[in-house]
Length: 144
Image (tube, rainbow, N blue to C red; front, side):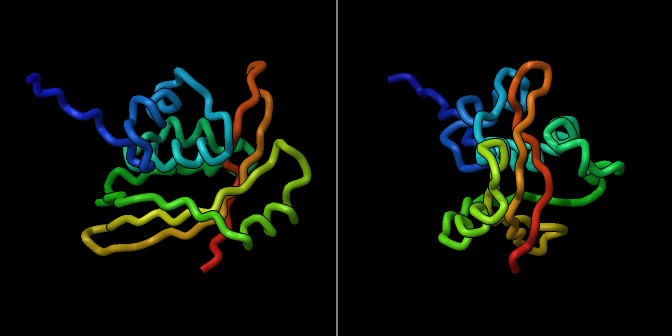
């Protein structure tokens, strides 16, 4: 009986990083949905992958300053995608085309040992870049 190691779970909650968000962060694949992009951005935050976060942030809202603070003792604990009627209502109000979408989530994390949660409704837009339709993070609101 051989001892095989189990593939590393994806930080976003997927089965394995290699089969879930890994190809997006490596550039081998492009997320096909706003939710897939949001999940991959969460993974990028857990890995402090500044380049991926900036590349997937829409240029019109991308911050000038670094997204990741390397001096902050931040530990991401988990991600929960919310699916609720109020989200569908918000989407109906904002969503004017198939090239816009929103994703509501709760991300749990610790800073210097203190637990926090981020509850956000993120807005995304899909645009052609280099002949490929890509989703970009646009902005977010905080329902709580």
